[in-house]
Amino acid sequence: MSSWQIWRDRRGRLSALRLVALALLLFPLAKALFDFDAIAHGARPLNDLIHRAGFWALVFLGVTLAVTPFRRIARYGNLIDVRRMLGVGAFCYIATHLALYVADQKFDWAKVAYELSHRIYLIVGGIAWLGLATLAITSTDGMVRRLGGLRWRRLHQAIYAIALLALIHYFQQTKADVTVPTFAAGLLTWLFGYRLLAWWRDTDELSALHLLGLAVAVAVLTFAGEAIGIGITFGVSPLRVLDSVFDFDAGIRPGWQVLAAGLAVVALDIVRARWHSRSPRSRAVAAE
Ligand code: HEM
Image 1 (tube, helix red, strand yellow):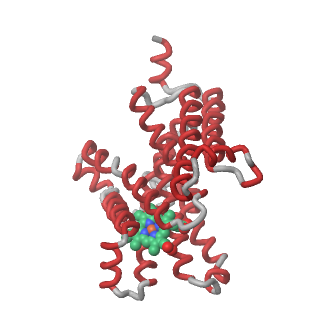
Image 2: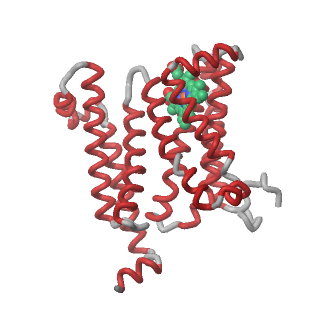
């Protein structure tokens, strides 16, 4: 089997899971083709594409980070098979993001170098870019062998710092409405929180109660973070911003969206726990 046939698993069989992951990765491309007319006749077609590529890179970075918690919560271990594919996919979008930016600068390399070293949001994005490139280059089986499992895992833990930088870059270049970046920040906080909680409790399987606590804590942090951010930006008291949390006419605040996502995860955990017996390790612990 050729290694470029990424829709086949390690044994060379056609993999439905890989096909789904591939379709997911190609979706933004298909959407851009579908929106071709609107993009081409828009004010700044290249800038539109830069935004799309950056946005989807961040989405796939988040999806890659979600694989480990999700495979545990959904009791679907096979999911690990597509983690590398999703991570490399995120890098492909970020490589496109940079290439489009260079094209937008009319391939004026001196200008690109100047901007990348003088604009704070581009410096932050540039560091995240280099980090993702390093992880993509070292994602092959050969590199895992060369670096050794432990060193490879330590290096790849940098994905959390990279995601944080990418998020800062997203906030820095967002001019008006920060609803979507705040929602993204909430989801990323959940992912960080899950890892921290699992490490602190020294377990691979957090209980539904832990997940519920995490969902509520992250939603509260999202509400507070948004209120403080808006308070600082517009010089108003964050408490006044929090007053409008229940005003659904003004839109559903990111804190609610994050809470809904967190509760959906709790529901998934409960449903899967009922249908699937826990892992042998958990059963052994329960029997003690
Ligand atoms: C050398 C590296 C990078 C460059 C030169 C760059 C450049 C840009 C530029 C020019 C914009 C649009 C700004 C505007 O229109 O005012 C942008 C937006 C964005 N970038 Fe980057 N970026 C880089 C790295 C990254 C990385 C590593 C990520 C995430 C993994 C990322 C994610 C985003 C996102 C999410 C947006 C906003 C998209 C939206 O508006 O929906 N960028 N970037």
